[in-house]
Length: 433
Image (cartoon, rainbow, N blue to C red; front, side, top):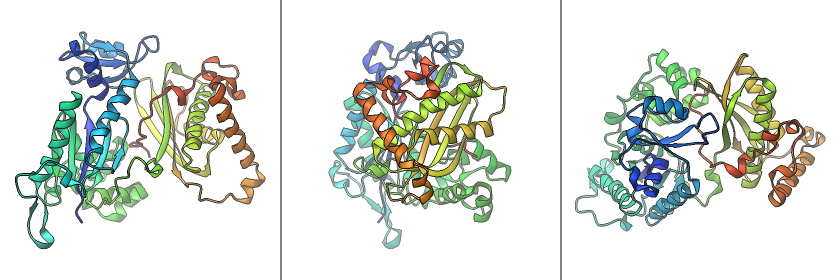
């Protein structure tokens, strides 16, 4: 049965919510910024007006102000963002229980079996006959517009919507018409609409991957779809096989309901630092801080052990790199941090100026993998019990009551409770090599 998958993306979400809180900011270039004492502030989000001046997420406020002297900067209000995210999902839940979040401001919805809940459509739901019978593009547009207008009318913020027959194309569609637009990519038209687009527009094709493909003459989604399997696999490995499937319209991944823990495919956190990290020992300490958060969240989610560690690094010039490695499945902070540090040492050579770091784990075994004799002999279980005990103590008495020795001489690291103070966003490893 042909599916109807919708991807919703709340436009300029943080900035839009700030305008709800401060209507007087409507129409002015706006940025949501971090602590002004830390790097003179980092741009967390920006409005459409600020985008026109070239303001970018992640740059310092002084850089943004240089581009846009009239830029208005407001501090973030994460509780409000969570509130509006829940309100938007409440609207979606009136139409389907198949809602899969992709961060705080994006969701996939599968409305295939719930279209009767929508207002009555005046035209024909289908076009064609027999095997060529598909949902009419006009009908799909109507469904997307219905959700988009409800969010705008009830919450006062806009959303871009993509409607297609799979998750990848629905996500791509929501990116094509911003802000406040509906893009439909039906079965009958996906090649005509998507194949001329840059290969970098496809989900999970970041800059590094796009450059690899372009060096082999694959510069569009259509060129990727028609490329020989062995060529793409040779360039990108298993990820290449996945991207071929996506480009050819063969994505069949289900939209998972929020109630399923299986929807969580990765757990990670990142931090931007008040000053550049220029020494390996500084980097290692801060990777342990991040790994503490990631390991604790992994244990809390009860997803078992992770077999892949990802590292993300951004330097003082805002240039980023990502890397990953397969590891022995683990939930231990020390193992995660040491794997991330090994990746850093492999990829980053001194001198360096690190502005931000991120650590993420994926490949969860859902507690189905048995421990090996080596792991049992190596006291893995004892260390896991110890870390779970630390989790319980910190939950009751506070994060700073128990600290690792590596952080003993660094008061800032010892009190940096990333898990307790940072908003969770989806991990995206678009530039891994």
